[in-house]
Image (tube, rainbow, N blue to C red):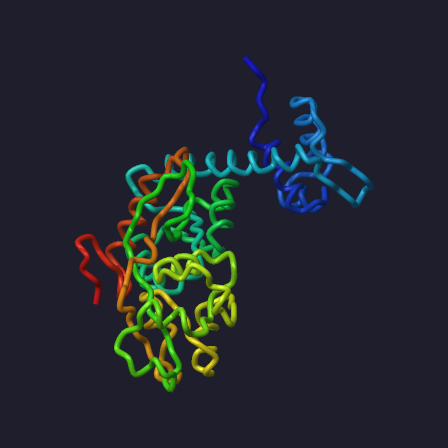
Length: 312
């Protein structure tokens, strides 16, 4: 039988990669430094390659191949932990640790109600949230740093398992004294002629919103880029321009203290679909489906359910 690395050796490798320090890694793995160093050397001998360059007692550098194998090791360890969780759960779903990656234009508007329900319904579940942009969520998923992700489509998801939850459109937020504020709805031409305040590059909502409004050249009328929807709405309240936000964000981001108004788009189109994603090899697929069911059962205001009915 072909000799294979042990999970302990892979754990040592990943911990050294994260700390870049043998002493700190040994402490985190609850072993002596000599034990950890010997484990890494055994792994290198088994694979026939150098994973770590020991430039000095303090300086540790991973080789290019070492960095590549660290990512594979993370995924193996994550899947192994998920396998143990699934076995221990047995007939008791949603127990133990579950790491959910979520994009910032979804988390604050979808998860608060769901987290409250989860605490009551599954008291043995420990749900850890990691908020990142979509590309990073998918990277974390591939590397095993998270178990599943809540993202917005369209976005390239490769061979991941994808469960679509619901659709939503975007609305325009304007200063209360803006010339377009007197209109009940705004057209694509209205938006094209005004200064837009948008999220910075990397946020998928930026592209989804612009595509839904048929705005193909945002740079021509884009005045500002922000890192959050809250910042955008505050800028609108200061009279700096108009922005587009998901309908589900209205109740959180727009309040009576801000001199802004919300207007529907006359040519409203679905801007994005929310979806749960996970690695197909993860044995906790049943748990992810249950979590998706919980999210579906507690939708925020303004989403489009199957059949086109909007939640109130």
